[in-house]
Length: 70
Image 1: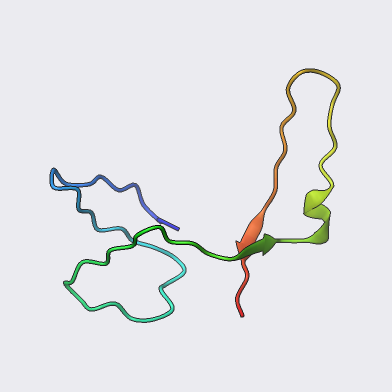
Image 2 (image 1 turned 60 degrees about the vertical axis):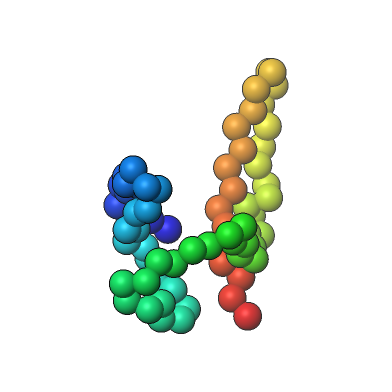
């Protein structure tokens, strides 16, 4: 997750402070290019799927996820 607001340069590059850290060290000073990154996620708790609905046209549902580490 980006921990600060980031603005890319005119060439489309940016330095993004993140937390938690990467699982493996990236080379310092080298670009880190991610193409179509994915991450397995799971619900934070079993209660996350219990989202009550209200009568009406629009309903807001909130769910919290965390990374599913092996």
